[in-house]
Amino acid sequence: MESPCIKLCQIDQATRLCQGCFRSLDEIAGWSRMSDAERSAVMAVLDERRLVSAEA
Image (tube, rainbow, N blue to C red; front, side, top):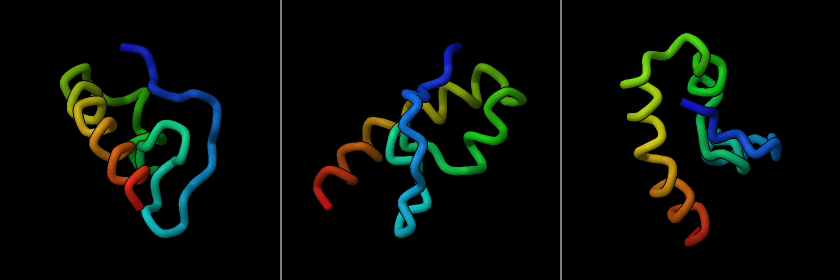
């Protein structure tokens, strides 16, 4: 599975999420060691995080 990184790496201080891919620092750091199931679980929540961020 490919990374959701779009090379816009900036951490939002309030949410502690990357403003480019909407992953947490722990998710970014552990991505290469995650199983496909773990990566899929992260990918499943990114759209919701993106929507919540857009509404704020």
